[in-house]
Image 1 (tube, rainbow over the protein chains, first blue to last red):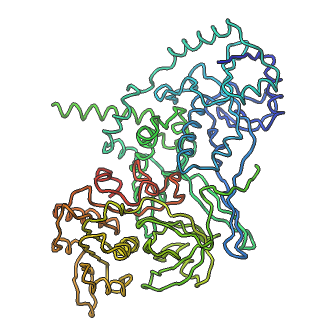
Image 2: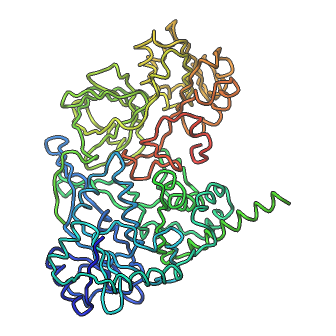
Image 3: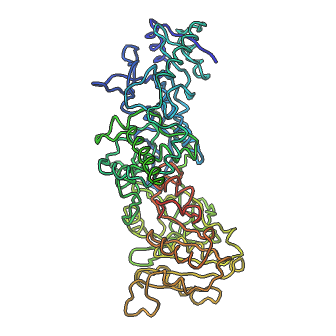
Length: 352
Length: 278
Protein backbone atom coordinates (compact mmCIF):
# COMPACT_ATOMS: atom_id res chain seq x y z
CA UNK A 1 0.00 0.00 0.00
CA UNK A 2 1.33 3.35 -0.99
CA UNK A 3 0.24 6.64 0.51
CA UNK A 4 1.17 10.12 -0.58
CA UNK A 5 -0.05 13.52 0.59
CA UNK A 6 -1.23 16.64 -1.16
CA UNK A 7 -0.92 19.89 0.77
CA UNK A 8 -4.09 22.00 0.49
CA UNK A 9 -2.17 24.99 -0.88
CA UNK A 10 -1.06 22.81 -3.79
CA UNK A 11 -4.58 21.50 -4.55
CA UNK A 12 -5.19 23.98 -7.37
CA UNK A 13 -1.83 23.12 -8.93
CA UNK A 14 -2.70 19.45 -8.77
CA UNK A 15 -6.09 19.97 -10.43
CA UNK A 16 -4.55 22.16 -13.13
CA UNK A 17 -1.95 19.46 -13.79
CA UNK A 18 -4.63 16.76 -13.79
CA UNK A 19 -6.84 18.59 -16.25
CA UNK A 20 -3.79 19.02 -18.47
CA UNK A 21 -3.49 15.24 -18.76
CA UNK A 22 -6.98 14.58 -20.11
CA UNK A 23 -10.54 15.81 -19.66
CA UNK A 24 -11.24 16.16 -15.96
CA UNK A 25 -14.67 15.82 -14.38
CA UNK A 26 -15.49 16.72 -10.78
CA UNK A 27 -18.49 17.66 -8.63
CA UNK A 28 -19.47 21.32 -8.99
CA UNK A 29 -22.29 23.23 -7.28
CA UNK A 30 -25.35 23.76 -9.49
CA UNK A 31 -28.00 25.71 -7.62
CA UNK A 32 -29.18 25.38 -4.03
CA UNK A 33 -27.85 22.20 -2.41
CA UNK A 34 -27.43 20.53 -5.80
CA UNK A 35 -24.26 19.26 -7.37
CA UNK A 36 -23.35 17.71 -10.69
CA UNK A 37 -20.33 16.04 -12.27
CA UNK A 38 -19.05 18.46 -14.88
CA UNK A 39 -15.83 19.23 -16.69
CA UNK A 40 -13.45 21.43 -14.67
CA UNK A 41 -10.04 22.91 -15.30
CA UNK A 42 -9.40 24.68 -12.00
CA UNK A 43 -9.56 23.51 -8.41
CA UNK A 44 -11.67 26.41 -7.15
CA UNK A 45 -14.69 25.18 -9.17
CA UNK A 46 -14.72 21.83 -7.39
CA UNK A 47 -17.05 21.19 -4.45
CA UNK A 48 -15.03 19.22 -1.94
CA UNK A 49 -17.94 18.97 0.46
CA UNK A 50 -21.00 17.89 -1.46
CA UNK A 51 -24.07 15.71 -1.16
CA UNK A 52 -24.34 13.09 -3.93
CA UNK A 53 -24.65 14.72 -7.33
CA UNK A 54 -27.99 14.76 -9.16
CA UNK A 55 -26.80 12.03 -11.52
CA UNK A 56 -24.14 9.55 -10.43
CA UNK A 57 -20.89 9.01 -12.31
CA UNK A 58 -22.58 6.16 -14.20
CA UNK A 59 -23.43 8.78 -16.84
CA UNK A 60 -19.82 8.50 -18.02
CA UNK A 61 -19.79 4.69 -17.99
CA UNK A 62 -23.25 4.13 -19.45
CA UNK A 63 -24.17 7.38 -21.17
CA UNK A 64 -27.84 8.31 -21.26
CA UNK A 65 -27.71 7.83 -25.00
CA UNK A 66 -25.10 5.71 -26.68
CA UNK A 67 -24.68 4.64 -30.31
CA UNK A 68 -24.41 0.88 -30.84
CA UNK A 69 -24.53 0.63 -34.63
CA UNK A 70 -24.09 2.91 -37.62
CA UNK A 71 -26.05 1.65 -40.59
CA UNK A 72 -26.66 2.41 -44.21
CA UNK A 73 -29.49 0.72 -46.07
CA UNK A 74 -28.89 2.14 -49.54
CA UNK A 75 -27.25 -1.11 -50.75
CA UNK A 76 -28.79 -3.57 -48.30
CA UNK A 77 -28.48 -4.11 -44.58
CA UNK A 78 -25.01 -2.66 -43.97
CA UNK A 79 -24.24 -1.98 -40.34
CA UNK A 80 -21.13 -1.69 -38.22
CA UNK A 81 -20.90 -1.96 -34.48
CA UNK A 82 -19.34 1.05 -32.81
CA UNK A 83 -18.21 2.06 -29.33
CA UNK A 84 -18.21 5.64 -28.13
CA UNK A 85 -15.54 6.47 -25.59
CA UNK A 86 -13.67 9.33 -24.04
CA UNK A 87 -10.41 9.59 -22.13
CA UNK A 88 -11.51 10.91 -18.76
CA UNK A 89 -10.43 11.44 -15.20
CA UNK A 90 -13.21 11.51 -12.64
CA UNK A 91 -12.24 13.35 -9.48
CA UNK A 92 -14.04 13.38 -6.17
CA UNK A 93 -16.20 10.25 -6.30
CA UNK A 94 -17.61 9.25 -2.93
CA UNK A 95 -17.38 5.63 -1.83
CA UNK A 96 -21.05 5.10 -2.69
CA UNK A 97 -20.49 6.09 -6.31
CA UNK A 98 -17.35 3.99 -6.58
CA UNK A 99 -19.37 1.05 -5.23
CA UNK A 100 -21.95 1.78 -7.93
CA UNK A 101 -19.31 1.49 -10.63
CA UNK A 102 -18.08 -1.76 -9.09
CA UNK A 103 -21.64 -3.10 -9.38
CA UNK A 104 -21.87 -2.07 -13.02
CA UNK A 105 -18.49 -3.70 -13.65
CA UNK A 106 -19.81 -7.00 -12.32
CA UNK A 107 -22.97 -6.99 -14.41
CA UNK A 108 -21.48 -5.80 -17.65
CA UNK A 109 -18.38 -7.97 -17.58
CA UNK A 110 -20.51 -11.05 -16.98
CA UNK A 111 -20.84 -13.13 -20.15
CA UNK A 112 -22.01 -12.23 -22.71
CA UNK A 113 -19.83 -9.20 -22.05
CA UNK A 114 -20.87 -5.69 -22.84
CA UNK A 115 -17.87 -4.51 -24.87
CA UNK A 116 -19.26 -1.00 -25.25
CA UNK A 117 -19.13 -0.56 -21.49
CA UNK A 118 -15.83 -2.35 -20.94
CA UNK A 119 -14.01 -0.38 -23.62
CA UNK A 120 -15.30 2.91 -22.29
CA UNK A 121 -14.42 1.99 -18.73
CA UNK A 122 -10.83 1.18 -19.70
CA UNK A 123 -10.40 4.86 -20.68
CA UNK A 124 -11.62 6.27 -17.37
CA UNK A 125 -9.44 6.98 -14.34
CA UNK A 126 -11.21 7.22 -10.99
CA UNK A 127 -10.13 9.40 -8.09
CA UNK A 128 -12.18 8.93 -4.94
CA UNK A 129 -12.83 11.33 -2.10
CA UNK A 130 -13.69 10.12 1.38
CA UNK A 131 -16.78 11.25 3.31
CA UNK A 132 -15.62 12.08 6.82
CA UNK A 133 -19.24 12.33 7.93
CA UNK A 134 -22.70 11.73 6.52
CA UNK A 135 -23.69 13.85 3.53
CA UNK A 136 -27.31 14.11 4.77
CA UNK A 137 -30.09 12.12 6.44
CA UNK A 138 -31.02 10.21 3.27
CA UNK A 139 -27.84 8.17 3.01
CA UNK A 140 -27.73 4.54 4.10
CA UNK A 141 -24.19 3.72 3.01
CA UNK A 142 -23.26 1.89 6.20
CA UNK A 143 -26.13 -0.59 5.85
CA UNK A 144 -24.80 -1.69 2.47
CA UNK A 145 -21.14 -1.49 3.52
CA UNK A 146 -20.18 1.37 1.22
CA UNK A 147 -19.19 4.01 3.78
CA UNK A 148 -15.50 3.07 3.71
CA UNK A 149 -13.28 2.78 0.64
CA UNK A 150 -13.33 -0.74 -0.75
CA UNK A 151 -11.26 -0.55 -3.91
CA UNK A 152 -12.48 0.28 -7.38
CA UNK A 153 -10.44 3.50 -7.69
CA UNK A 154 -7.03 4.55 -8.96
CA UNK A 155 -6.39 7.21 -6.31
CA UNK A 156 -8.35 7.91 -3.15
CA UNK A 157 -8.30 11.23 -1.31
CA UNK A 158 -9.01 11.70 2.38
CA UNK A 159 -9.19 15.20 3.85
CA UNK A 160 -6.93 15.48 6.91
CA UNK A 161 -7.48 19.19 7.51
CA UNK A 162 -4.33 20.87 6.19
CA UNK A 163 -3.64 18.20 3.58
CA UNK A 164 -5.14 15.26 1.73
CA UNK A 165 -3.75 11.80 2.23
CA UNK A 166 -3.95 9.91 -1.01
CA UNK A 167 -4.02 6.14 -1.45
CA UNK A 168 -2.40 5.04 -4.69
CA UNK A 169 -4.24 1.90 -5.74
CA UNK A 170 -3.24 1.23 -9.35
CA UNK A 171 -0.58 1.81 -11.92
CA UNK A 172 -2.76 4.50 -13.49
CA UNK A 173 -2.79 6.21 -10.10
CA UNK A 174 0.99 6.03 -9.95
CA UNK A 175 1.21 7.71 -13.32
CA UNK A 176 -0.93 10.60 -12.12
CA UNK A 177 1.29 11.04 -9.06
CA UNK A 178 4.36 11.15 -11.29
CA UNK A 179 2.83 13.38 -13.96
CA UNK A 180 1.33 16.05 -11.68
CA UNK A 181 4.39 16.24 -9.41
CA UNK A 182 2.51 17.89 -6.53
CA UNK A 183 2.32 14.95 -4.17
CA UNK A 184 4.77 14.06 -1.45
CA UNK A 185 5.44 10.87 0.41
CA UNK A 186 3.19 10.44 3.46
CA UNK A 187 4.81 10.37 6.88
CA UNK A 188 3.89 8.27 9.93
CA UNK A 189 1.93 11.21 11.36
CA UNK A 190 -0.30 11.30 8.28
CA UNK A 191 -0.96 7.58 8.41
CA UNK A 192 -1.78 7.90 12.06
CA UNK A 193 -4.15 10.80 11.38
CA UNK A 194 -5.89 8.64 8.76
CA UNK A 195 -6.29 5.84 11.29
CA UNK A 196 -7.76 8.23 13.86
CA UNK A 197 -10.17 9.58 11.26
CA UNK A 198 -11.30 6.10 10.21
CA UNK A 199 -11.81 5.08 13.84
CA UNK A 200 -13.93 8.18 14.38
CA UNK A 201 -15.93 7.29 11.26
CA UNK A 202 -16.75 3.88 12.69
CA UNK A 203 -18.64 5.69 15.43
CA UNK A 204 -20.29 8.25 13.13
CA UNK A 205 -21.44 5.75 10.50
CA UNK A 206 -23.92 3.35 11.96
CA UNK A 207 -26.74 1.21 10.67
CA UNK A 208 -29.25 3.68 9.36
CA UNK A 209 -32.00 1.08 9.46
CA UNK A 210 -32.55 -1.20 12.49
CA UNK A 211 -31.46 -4.43 10.83
CA UNK A 212 -28.14 -6.16 10.58
CA UNK A 213 -26.64 -6.17 7.12
CA UNK A 214 -26.54 -9.98 6.93
CA UNK A 215 -30.27 -10.23 7.66
CA UNK A 216 -31.35 -7.99 4.78
CA UNK A 217 -31.56 -10.77 2.13
CA UNK A 218 -33.69 -12.88 4.50
CA UNK A 219 -35.99 -9.92 5.05
CA UNK A 220 -36.54 -9.74 1.30
CA UNK A 221 -37.04 -13.52 1.09
CA UNK A 222 -40.05 -13.06 3.35
CA UNK A 223 -41.52 -9.87 1.99
CA UNK A 224 -42.58 -10.55 -1.60
CA UNK A 225 -46.26 -10.42 -0.69
CA UNK A 226 -46.08 -7.72 1.98
CA UNK A 227 -48.66 -4.94 1.99
CA UNK A 228 -45.79 -2.39 2.04
CA UNK A 229 -45.65 -2.72 -1.74
CA UNK A 230 -49.36 -1.95 -2.06
CA UNK A 231 -48.85 1.15 0.05
CA UNK A 232 -46.03 2.28 -2.26
CA UNK A 233 -48.36 1.82 -5.21
CA UNK A 234 -50.70 4.44 -3.82
CA UNK A 235 -47.89 7.01 -3.73
CA UNK A 236 -45.63 6.14 -6.67
CA UNK A 237 -46.11 8.35 -9.73
CA UNK A 238 -44.20 5.93 -12.00
CA UNK A 239 -41.96 8.72 -13.25
CA UNK A 240 -38.74 6.71 -13.23
CA UNK A 241 -36.68 9.37 -11.43
CA UNK A 242 -35.47 6.87 -8.83
CA UNK A 243 -33.93 4.57 -11.43
CA UNK A 244 -32.45 7.40 -13.48
CA UNK A 245 -30.46 8.70 -10.53
CA UNK A 246 -29.52 5.26 -9.17
CA UNK A 247 -25.81 4.50 -9.56
CA UNK A 248 -26.52 0.81 -10.22
CA UNK A 249 -29.58 0.93 -12.48
CA UNK A 250 -28.47 -0.03 -15.95
CA UNK A 251 -31.62 -1.14 -17.83
CA UNK A 252 -31.98 0.31 -21.29
CA UNK A 253 -34.08 0.50 -24.40
CA UNK A 254 -32.71 0.12 -27.92
CA UNK A 255 -34.02 2.38 -30.67
CA UNK A 256 -33.31 3.19 -34.30
CA UNK A 257 -33.06 6.62 -35.83
CA UNK A 258 -32.63 7.53 -39.49
CA UNK A 259 -31.41 10.82 -40.94
CA UNK A 260 -33.25 12.78 -43.62
CA UNK A 261 -32.02 10.47 -46.40
CA UNK A 262 -33.98 7.62 -44.78
CA UNK A 263 -30.96 5.45 -45.59
CA UNK A 264 -28.31 6.25 -43.03
CA UNK A 265 -28.94 6.07 -39.35
CA UNK A 266 -27.92 4.78 -35.97
CA UNK A 267 -29.13 2.20 -33.52
CA UNK A 268 -28.66 3.54 -30.01
CA UNK A 269 -29.50 2.64 -26.46
CA UNK A 270 -31.01 4.95 -23.89
CA UNK A 271 -31.65 4.62 -20.17
CA UNK A 272 -34.99 3.04 -19.49
CA UNK A 273 -36.83 2.43 -16.27
CA UNK A 274 -38.62 -0.59 -14.85
CA UNK A 275 -40.89 1.96 -13.14
CA UNK A 276 -42.42 3.05 -16.43
CA UNK A 277 -45.63 1.38 -17.51
CA UNK A 278 -44.51 -0.07 -20.89
CA UNK A 279 -41.28 -1.59 -19.57
CA UNK A 280 -42.51 -5.18 -19.26
CA UNK A 281 -45.17 -5.01 -21.94
CA UNK A 282 -45.08 -7.43 -24.87
CA UNK A 283 -46.63 -7.32 -28.32
CA UNK A 284 -50.35 -7.82 -28.05
CA UNK A 285 -50.53 -5.69 -24.92
CA UNK A 286 -49.88 -8.06 -22.03
CA UNK A 287 -47.95 -6.29 -19.28
CA UNK A 288 -46.04 -8.53 -16.90
CA UNK A 289 -45.60 -5.78 -14.29
CA UNK A 290 -48.76 -3.82 -14.73
CA UNK A 291 -49.15 -2.58 -11.17
CA UNK A 292 -46.92 0.05 -9.67
CA UNK A 293 -46.58 -2.09 -6.58
CA UNK A 294 -44.99 -4.84 -8.67
CA UNK A 295 -42.70 -2.32 -10.33
CA UNK A 296 -41.60 -0.71 -7.06
CA UNK A 297 -41.07 -4.16 -5.54
CA UNK A 298 -38.99 -5.10 -8.57
CA UNK A 299 -36.78 -2.06 -8.01
CA UNK A 300 -36.14 -2.93 -4.37
CA UNK A 301 -35.53 -6.60 -5.16
CA UNK A 302 -33.04 -5.60 -7.82
CA UNK A 303 -31.10 -3.75 -5.14
CA UNK A 304 -31.37 -6.02 -2.11
CA UNK A 305 -32.23 -9.53 -3.27
CA UNK A 306 -31.54 -10.70 -6.84
CA UNK A 307 -27.95 -9.36 -7.09
CA UNK A 308 -27.11 -10.81 -3.68
CA UNK A 309 -27.87 -14.28 -5.08
CA UNK A 310 -25.95 -13.67 -8.27
CA UNK A 311 -23.06 -11.36 -7.38
CA UNK A 312 -22.98 -11.62 -3.57
CA UNK A 313 -23.39 -7.89 -3.10
CA UNK A 314 -26.11 -5.32 -2.62
CA UNK A 315 -26.86 -3.16 -5.62
CA UNK A 316 -27.87 -0.34 -3.31
CA UNK A 317 -24.85 1.79 -2.51
CA UNK A 318 -26.64 3.90 0.08
CA UNK A 319 -26.20 7.18 -1.81
CA UNK A 320 -29.80 8.21 -1.05
CA UNK A 321 -30.44 9.67 -4.49
CA UNK A 322 -33.72 7.80 -5.05
CA UNK A 323 -35.12 9.27 -1.85
CA UNK A 324 -33.86 12.79 -2.54
CA UNK A 325 -35.33 12.83 -6.02
CA UNK A 326 -38.70 11.15 -5.43
CA UNK A 327 -41.54 13.56 -6.08
CA UNK A 328 -43.90 11.43 -4.02
CA UNK A 329 -41.57 11.29 -1.04
CA UNK A 330 -40.94 7.55 -1.21
CA UNK A 331 -37.97 6.95 1.04
CA UNK A 332 -35.73 3.92 0.79
CA UNK A 333 -34.93 3.94 4.50
CA UNK A 334 -38.62 4.29 5.35
CA UNK A 335 -39.55 1.38 3.07
CA UNK A 336 -36.92 -0.82 4.72
CA UNK A 337 -38.23 0.22 8.13
CA UNK A 338 -41.76 -0.69 7.11
CA UNK A 339 -40.66 -4.04 5.74
CA UNK A 340 -38.95 -4.79 9.05
CA UNK A 341 -42.08 -3.73 10.94
CA UNK A 342 -44.43 -5.80 8.80
CA UNK A 343 -42.11 -8.76 9.07
CA UNK A 344 -42.13 -8.49 12.88
CA UNK A 345 -45.91 -8.04 12.97
CA UNK A 346 -46.37 -11.20 10.93
CA UNK A 347 -43.98 -13.08 13.18
CA UNK A 348 -45.94 -12.02 16.27
CA UNK A 349 -49.22 -13.02 14.67
CA UNK A 350 -47.90 -16.49 14.07
CA UNK A 351 -47.05 -16.83 17.78
CA UNK A 352 -50.30 -15.39 19.12
CA UNK B 1 -16.75 11.69 -27.54
CA UNK B 2 -14.71 9.50 -29.87
CA UNK B 3 -16.03 6.57 -31.86
CA UNK B 4 -14.41 3.28 -32.73
CA UNK B 5 -15.68 0.47 -34.97
CA UNK B 6 -15.45 -2.94 -33.32
CA UNK B 7 -15.86 -6.33 -34.91
CA UNK B 8 -18.03 -7.98 -32.33
CA UNK B 9 -19.90 -5.92 -29.81
CA UNK B 10 -22.81 -8.13 -28.89
CA UNK B 11 -24.97 -5.97 -31.16
CA UNK B 12 -23.15 -6.88 -34.36
CA UNK B 13 -25.55 -8.00 -37.06
CA UNK B 14 -25.31 -10.70 -39.70
CA UNK B 15 -26.78 -10.03 -43.12
CA UNK B 16 -29.54 -12.34 -44.19
CA UNK B 17 -31.87 -12.71 -47.15
CA UNK B 18 -35.53 -13.60 -47.24
CA UNK B 19 -35.96 -16.59 -49.56
CA UNK B 20 -39.67 -17.24 -49.29
CA UNK B 21 -42.68 -15.70 -47.64
CA UNK B 22 -45.78 -17.75 -47.07
CA UNK B 23 -49.07 -16.39 -45.81
CA UNK B 24 -50.31 -18.61 -42.98
CA UNK B 25 -53.31 -16.64 -41.74
CA UNK B 26 -54.53 -13.10 -42.00
CA UNK B 27 -51.91 -11.92 -39.48
CA UNK B 28 -49.15 -14.52 -39.60
CA UNK B 29 -46.57 -15.17 -42.26
CA UNK B 30 -43.75 -17.66 -42.49
CA UNK B 31 -40.38 -16.32 -43.61
CA UNK B 32 -37.63 -18.56 -44.88
CA UNK B 33 -34.30 -16.83 -44.37
CA UNK B 34 -30.69 -17.64 -45.24
CA UNK B 35 -27.57 -16.11 -43.78
CA UNK B 36 -25.67 -14.32 -46.52
CA UNK B 37 -22.26 -15.62 -45.57
CA UNK B 38 -23.52 -19.18 -46.01
CA UNK B 39 -23.15 -19.88 -42.29
CA UNK B 40 -25.32 -22.44 -40.55
CA UNK B 41 -27.49 -21.14 -37.77
CA UNK B 42 -26.99 -24.29 -35.69
CA UNK B 43 -29.77 -23.56 -33.24
CA UNK B 44 -31.64 -25.65 -30.68
CA UNK B 45 -35.44 -25.90 -30.85
CA UNK B 46 -36.83 -23.16 -28.59
CA UNK B 47 -34.09 -20.59 -29.22
CA UNK B 48 -34.85 -17.20 -30.73
CA UNK B 49 -33.29 -14.69 -33.13
CA UNK B 50 -33.09 -10.93 -32.95
CA UNK B 51 -34.43 -9.77 -36.30
CA UNK B 52 -33.55 -6.26 -37.49
CA UNK B 53 -35.02 -3.93 -40.01
CA UNK B 54 -32.47 -1.14 -39.90
CA UNK B 55 -34.13 2.17 -39.23
CA UNK B 56 -37.29 0.57 -37.90
CA UNK B 57 -36.11 -1.62 -35.08
CA UNK B 58 -35.23 -5.04 -33.79
CA UNK B 59 -37.52 -7.77 -32.42
CA UNK B 60 -37.00 -11.17 -30.81
CA UNK B 61 -38.61 -13.97 -32.83
CA UNK B 62 -38.43 -17.68 -32.14
CA UNK B 63 -37.02 -19.98 -34.76
CA UNK B 64 -39.66 -22.39 -36.04
CA UNK B 65 -37.67 -24.65 -38.35
CA UNK B 66 -35.82 -27.85 -37.52
CA UNK B 67 -32.10 -27.66 -36.73
CA UNK B 68 -31.76 -30.39 -39.35
CA UNK B 69 -32.61 -27.80 -42.00
CA UNK B 70 -29.12 -26.48 -42.67
CA UNK B 71 -29.21 -23.98 -45.49
CA UNK B 72 -31.89 -21.71 -44.13
CA UNK B 73 -34.15 -21.16 -41.15
CA UNK B 74 -37.74 -20.11 -40.72
CA UNK B 75 -39.55 -17.65 -38.50
CA UNK B 76 -43.28 -17.23 -38.10
CA UNK B 77 -44.22 -13.60 -37.59
CA UNK B 78 -47.49 -12.11 -36.44
CA UNK B 79 -47.95 -8.53 -37.62
CA UNK B 80 -48.55 -6.87 -34.29
CA UNK B 81 -46.07 -4.01 -33.96
CA UNK B 82 -43.93 -1.60 -35.94
CA UNK B 83 -41.18 -4.02 -36.97
CA UNK B 84 -43.38 -7.05 -37.59
CA UNK B 85 -45.74 -5.04 -39.79
CA UNK B 86 -42.79 -3.75 -41.79
CA UNK B 87 -41.52 -7.34 -42.12
CA UNK B 88 -44.84 -8.35 -43.60
CA UNK B 89 -44.43 -5.64 -46.23
CA UNK B 90 -41.14 -7.13 -47.48
CA UNK B 91 -40.78 -9.23 -50.63
CA UNK B 92 -38.65 -12.36 -51.17
CA UNK B 93 -35.08 -11.37 -51.95
CA UNK B 94 -35.06 -8.51 -49.43
CA UNK B 95 -32.00 -8.18 -47.28
CA UNK B 96 -32.46 -8.01 -43.53
CA UNK B 97 -30.09 -8.29 -40.57
CA UNK B 98 -30.17 -10.77 -37.72
CA UNK B 99 -28.21 -11.79 -34.64
CA UNK B 100 -28.45 -14.94 -32.61
CA UNK B 101 -29.52 -17.59 -31.91
CA UNK B 102 -30.10 -16.62 -28.28
CA UNK B 103 -31.29 -18.31 -25.14
CA UNK B 104 -31.72 -21.84 -23.89
CA UNK B 105 -33.88 -24.11 -25.98
CA UNK B 106 -35.55 -27.40 -25.17
CA UNK B 107 -33.09 -29.92 -23.69
CA UNK B 108 -33.04 -32.29 -26.66
CA UNK B 109 -30.46 -34.63 -25.14
CA UNK B 110 -32.70 -35.11 -22.12
CA UNK B 111 -35.81 -35.62 -24.20
CA UNK B 112 -34.30 -38.29 -26.45
CA UNK B 113 -35.47 -41.80 -25.66
CA UNK B 114 -38.58 -40.55 -23.86
CA UNK B 115 -42.21 -39.96 -24.72
CA UNK B 116 -43.23 -36.40 -25.51
CA UNK B 117 -46.41 -34.49 -24.83
CA UNK B 118 -46.33 -31.26 -26.78
CA UNK B 119 -48.97 -28.67 -25.91
CA UNK B 120 -49.24 -25.64 -28.19
CA UNK B 121 -51.62 -22.74 -27.85
CA UNK B 122 -52.07 -20.34 -30.79
CA UNK B 123 -48.80 -18.78 -31.90
CA UNK B 124 -47.02 -21.02 -29.37
CA UNK B 125 -47.02 -23.58 -32.16
CA UNK B 126 -44.26 -21.58 -33.90
CA UNK B 127 -41.39 -22.34 -31.47
CA UNK B 128 -42.79 -25.84 -30.93
CA UNK B 129 -42.75 -26.49 -34.67
CA UNK B 130 -38.96 -26.41 -34.41
CA UNK B 131 -39.17 -29.14 -31.77
CA UNK B 132 -41.80 -31.15 -33.64
CA UNK B 133 -39.97 -31.08 -36.96
CA UNK B 134 -36.75 -32.02 -35.16
CA UNK B 135 -38.54 -34.98 -33.58
CA UNK B 136 -39.97 -36.03 -36.96
CA UNK B 137 -36.51 -35.72 -38.53
CA UNK B 138 -35.13 -37.97 -35.79
CA UNK B 139 -38.26 -39.98 -35.14
CA UNK B 140 -36.49 -43.15 -34.00
CA UNK B 141 -34.79 -41.33 -31.13
CA UNK B 142 -38.10 -40.63 -29.40
CA UNK B 143 -40.86 -42.79 -27.92
CA UNK B 144 -44.55 -41.96 -28.22
CA UNK B 145 -45.19 -38.41 -29.33
CA UNK B 146 -48.44 -36.57 -28.58
CA UNK B 147 -49.14 -33.16 -30.08
CA UNK B 148 -52.04 -31.12 -28.71
CA UNK B 149 -52.88 -27.87 -30.41
CA UNK B 150 -55.50 -25.31 -29.61
CA UNK B 151 -56.37 -21.98 -31.15
CA UNK B 152 -59.21 -19.51 -31.10
CA UNK B 153 -60.91 -20.23 -34.41
CA UNK B 154 -60.29 -22.59 -37.36
CA UNK B 155 -59.13 -19.65 -39.45
CA UNK B 156 -56.32 -19.00 -36.93
CA UNK B 157 -54.68 -22.37 -37.59
CA UNK B 158 -51.01 -22.00 -38.42
CA UNK B 159 -49.22 -24.46 -40.69
CA UNK B 160 -52.53 -26.10 -41.58
CA UNK B 161 -51.04 -28.37 -44.28
CA UNK B 162 -48.44 -29.59 -41.79
CA UNK B 163 -51.11 -30.13 -39.16
CA UNK B 164 -52.92 -32.40 -41.63
CA UNK B 165 -49.67 -34.23 -42.28
CA UNK B 166 -49.06 -34.76 -38.55
CA UNK B 167 -52.63 -35.94 -38.21
CA UNK B 168 -52.16 -38.55 -40.92
CA UNK B 169 -48.86 -39.90 -39.62
CA UNK B 170 -49.20 -43.19 -37.78
CA UNK B 171 -46.19 -42.50 -35.55
CA UNK B 172 -47.64 -39.32 -34.02
CA UNK B 173 -50.73 -38.75 -31.95
CA UNK B 174 -52.18 -35.40 -32.93
CA UNK B 175 -55.28 -33.69 -31.59
CA UNK B 176 -56.54 -30.16 -31.94
CA UNK B 177 -59.35 -28.02 -30.67
CA UNK B 178 -60.74 -24.56 -31.29
CA UNK B 179 -62.34 -22.20 -28.81
CA UNK B 180 -65.02 -21.15 -31.28
CA UNK B 181 -66.01 -23.24 -34.30
CA UNK B 182 -67.25 -22.14 -37.69
CA UNK B 183 -69.87 -24.04 -39.74
CA UNK B 184 -67.21 -26.09 -41.59
CA UNK B 185 -65.47 -27.27 -38.43
CA UNK B 186 -66.02 -30.88 -37.50
CA UNK B 187 -63.34 -31.30 -34.84
CA UNK B 188 -63.12 -30.65 -31.10
CA UNK B 189 -64.46 -27.48 -29.57
CA UNK B 190 -63.18 -26.15 -26.27
CA UNK B 191 -60.04 -24.81 -24.64
CA UNK B 192 -56.83 -26.82 -24.92
CA UNK B 193 -57.05 -28.25 -21.42
CA UNK B 194 -60.05 -30.33 -22.53
CA UNK B 195 -57.69 -32.44 -24.67
CA UNK B 196 -55.30 -33.38 -21.88
CA UNK B 197 -57.39 -35.82 -19.82
CA UNK B 198 -57.96 -38.04 -22.86
CA UNK B 199 -54.28 -38.44 -23.73
CA UNK B 200 -52.92 -41.90 -22.96
CA UNK B 201 -49.44 -41.41 -21.48
CA UNK B 202 -47.04 -43.09 -19.11
CA UNK B 203 -46.25 -40.12 -16.89
CA UNK B 204 -42.90 -41.36 -15.59
CA UNK B 205 -41.40 -41.49 -19.06
CA UNK B 206 -43.21 -38.50 -20.54
CA UNK B 207 -41.68 -35.07 -20.97
CA UNK B 208 -44.07 -32.20 -21.62
CA UNK B 209 -43.26 -29.11 -23.69
CA UNK B 210 -45.73 -26.23 -23.46
CA UNK B 211 -45.83 -22.94 -25.31
CA UNK B 212 -48.80 -20.66 -25.54
CA UNK B 213 -50.28 -17.40 -24.33
CA UNK B 214 -49.52 -16.53 -20.67
CA UNK B 215 -53.03 -17.35 -19.50
CA UNK B 216 -52.70 -20.93 -20.74
CA UNK B 217 -49.82 -22.08 -18.54
CA UNK B 218 -51.51 -22.32 -15.15
CA UNK B 219 -54.43 -24.35 -16.52
CA UNK B 220 -52.32 -26.68 -18.65
CA UNK B 221 -49.80 -27.32 -15.89
CA UNK B 222 -52.61 -28.12 -13.48
CA UNK B 223 -53.91 -30.77 -15.90
CA UNK B 224 -50.42 -32.20 -16.48
CA UNK B 225 -49.85 -32.52 -12.75
CA UNK B 226 -53.22 -34.33 -12.46
CA UNK B 227 -51.83 -36.68 -15.12
CA UNK B 228 -48.90 -37.18 -12.71
CA UNK B 229 -46.19 -35.94 -15.02
CA UNK B 230 -43.28 -35.08 -12.68
CA UNK B 231 -42.64 -31.34 -12.28
CA UNK B 232 -39.08 -31.62 -13.51
CA UNK B 233 -40.28 -33.20 -16.75
CA UNK B 234 -42.36 -30.19 -17.74
CA UNK B 235 -40.69 -27.56 -19.93
CA UNK B 236 -42.25 -24.29 -20.95
CA UNK B 237 -41.20 -21.27 -22.92
CA UNK B 238 -42.01 -17.70 -21.94
CA UNK B 239 -42.70 -14.71 -24.09
CA UNK B 240 -41.04 -11.47 -22.99
CA UNK B 241 -39.88 -8.47 -24.96
CA UNK B 242 -36.11 -8.95 -25.11
CA UNK B 243 -34.29 -5.88 -26.33
CA UNK B 244 -30.64 -6.89 -26.04
CA UNK B 245 -30.62 -10.70 -25.82
CA UNK B 246 -27.48 -10.45 -23.70
CA UNK B 247 -29.03 -10.47 -20.25
CA UNK B 248 -28.43 -6.77 -19.65
CA UNK B 249 -31.30 -4.52 -20.69
CA UNK B 250 -33.68 -5.87 -18.04
CA UNK B 251 -36.75 -5.91 -20.23
CA UNK B 252 -37.30 -9.67 -20.13
CA UNK B 253 -36.50 -10.13 -16.44
CA UNK B 254 -38.69 -12.51 -14.46
CA UNK B 255 -37.69 -11.78 -10.86
CA UNK B 256 -34.04 -12.92 -10.67
CA UNK B 257 -33.99 -14.58 -14.11
CA UNK B 258 -33.34 -13.09 -17.50
CA UNK B 259 -35.68 -14.75 -19.98
CA UNK B 260 -33.24 -14.15 -22.86
CA UNK B 261 -30.28 -15.91 -21.23
CA UNK B 262 -31.74 -18.17 -18.53
CA UNK B 263 -34.69 -19.06 -20.81
CA UNK B 264 -36.87 -18.66 -22.78
CA UNK B 265 -37.34 -22.40 -22.13
CA UNK B 266 -37.54 -23.15 -18.42
CA UNK B 267 -38.02 -26.28 -16.40
CA UNK B 268 -41.25 -25.98 -14.43
CA UNK B 269 -39.67 -27.16 -11.18
CA UNK B 270 -37.06 -24.42 -11.46
CA UNK B 271 -39.54 -21.57 -11.86
CA UNK B 272 -42.77 -22.75 -10.24
CA UNK B 273 -42.28 -20.43 -7.27
CA UNK B 274 -41.65 -17.32 -9.35
CA UNK B 275 -44.94 -15.53 -9.10
CA UNK B 276 -43.99 -13.05 -11.83
CA UNK B 277 -43.62 -15.93 -14.28
CA UNK B 278 -47.30 -16.86 -14.41
